[in-house]
Image (cartoon, rainbow, N blue to C red; front, side):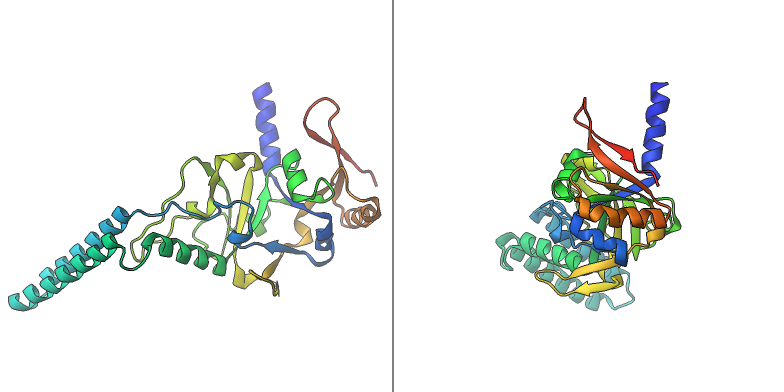
Length: 289
């Protein structure tokens, strides 16, 4: 019986994904706009930070590239003398590149690789972080400014989300975060696509958040506000997706009427969060019409 209850609870939780908002972002109830955030603006310093390739990794790729180049020359219909000449050119170039890597003549290759990878991600990709939980005391504290904000519950089964669960659609992806002790390595070979685990992976330290991510190209933003170091990109998340709203324990009373009016007019369930009397848990009570 207990297993059945826990399974049912998990299934119910995954039907709704939540977005914690500080009270200042109550503007979402007016404009339907939520921020899609660049990786560098998130609060995890390891965000989108793959394992840095070693010099041996770079050497292995160099060897593979030049071996393939020589094999192509050998298969060509060129004269034997021309093949020999081109193969020698490839070997000399290979030795030169190997020496540069070993002697670090091009500067810190690993640092340049990482800087370019991170710059590319922050230029093109935005993240809307959602969660399968509404009852995390830590998330209420961190993301709603000490329980002063609200938590919006969206229907995760709506086509707005579900049609983007497949990795094939690279314009928008909706997938759960993978929690791991090991950082993901990115491929160095030209033309090999980056495993999406890189942008969907976090340390197990964050596992309590049960995060789901909507990954969106920044060019799809509905509104852009100029800012430094990164522009604020806002993306439309329709109100029709909202199934429930939960206001925090310390949500200001002068804003509560606005939320009540919005929920009652749109037939959305409204809850008030409260502190458990017996456990270190958050509970909630439903507002009646």
